[in-house]
Length: 493
Image 1 (tube, rainbow, N blue to C red):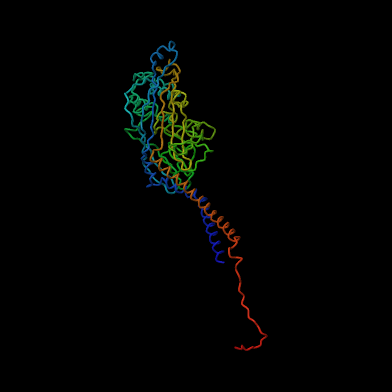
Image 2 (image 1 turned 90 degrees about the vertical axis):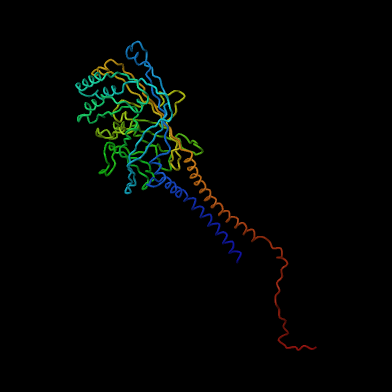
């Protein structure tokens, strides 16, 4: 009896161990997701919140500018010059610095409202180089006035002549890309173009550059609102912009004409499904990118999903698509005036994104891509490279551009590259190792429990059938009482 109890106890212990391991194995995914959510928490005071406000991982930018080497000959005697010649100069390397200001946490809907400031610092010392390119100030004046009244165009023509503007300019590369140059005629252009009748016409800034640095003014962006995933983890990292609206207050529900509501390429939700494409918006570049899964790739020993950019399109290009956004008012969705690139299609300015690989050297044609760690949604590496150009067109009402040929002019291209730092990569490896250890422990518990049960049953069966060594030699002594027929017979000595 005692032996049977021992078998039952051992079998019960094994079944309990196996059941505990199975429960832990099934629940470990949810437990790990909770740990990841804690690591990715953007609530004020968390470690990631501090990193998000003052990033220590800074994207590296490489800029290339195109020098119009035969501009004078081509414009003066175009019939004798077969084609315009452009020489790519660079790279000019800069680090991007971003800081988040005016942050408020809204507990009711689990969002952070904030503004961004972005500026650049040159990371290498290069010899100042002058670039000959199209005079973008004059080109902008002709472009903005092309649909205006004849009198306005003639006034702009006289304005260009009085300020001695030409079709081309030669400037240091730093001025063309970042700092710009104060043009006296810009103020006159503002007075002429920025009137009540021309609400949809963007007014030029006090300085005009292909890339607008905020090293002096540190002008912040508009107000953003980001979901931190408190109520829905799938919405983690989605940023909303209300475009030209000063405040989203009073809007019970977000509408497409208000701006955008998408990921911005900095933060992604966990548990990424590689079968679903990802759409991100780069508001500073006036671009919407569609990411599609390409393949798995190792980055510093971490397996990531490599997403390549299959489609690049202007953000407000969707306003003309048959999705209802073509009914948006003119003042809606003005992106880029507060961002890095202040001369783009979102502002109606004649700077257009070209085929990402068309103007790059053959040995530098790389796809635009993001590499994401699928379990945590961490960006392991990203590479964005875009090429921009403008179009020189004749304008019969602007004397400066009456006889110019129509020509596509490459302006610049850039490469923005960012990779997870070694310290953060090591921390991510530890977190992913914890996931593997949890699975192994749970699986080990199941196997151990089932092994205990199996061994116990086998041993019990074996013991019950095992013959005993002394089983044939055992005797039973049965007590007997001799009877004499109930007669008392005395014993005689």
